[in-house]
Image 1 (spheres, rainbow, N blue to C red):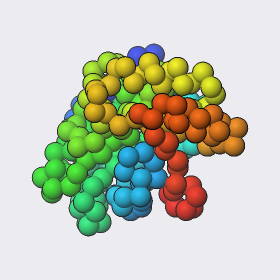
Image 2: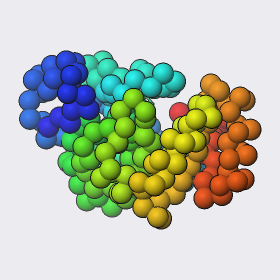
Image 3: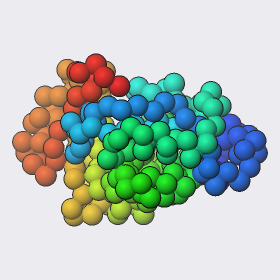
Length: 222
Ligand code: SF4
């Protein structure tokens, strides 16, 4: 079934009607590919990526706007998505979006786990959690902040820093995650040159945080 991020989202409600109780057996696939993780704790690690359509969080700097509208992306049999991941030979899958938790991911995760594939998710935490995850990378967004439940479960907290007041926002969420959650500050890509000196300075003074760079963009890979 569907997970509503924004109960006022007419678009999501329309799609829910059109697909009914899919129970996650069909998902709106934007793209799937084998690549190297570019961000956060697992940067540099090879993984199979599954990008799902749909997001109404609306970050002004979003670099995956093409994934926002789920109606633009075909509903694919989740079994086929699982088979493609297995066929890739990858030992881990990163489910991303869009906001992948707009969808019920229980069926996807159980199929991946049956095939001994580790499950990683990149999420804003704006929707209800589904699926079983070996790694939850939580990247809260001011437009639609996450609930406290997913904060406690996150393995990694990744805060996008666009301006200096975002450090305060980062500290708010550091207090909500568990003590062993990995903490990352990541410069917003289009403001890199402006903001990176402040991030470096902040990490030097607050070494519990690390810097995450989007290394896939430097390597010109997806
Ligand atoms: Fe883009 Fe992610 Fe923000 Fe959605 S939550 S608008 S996909 S950056």
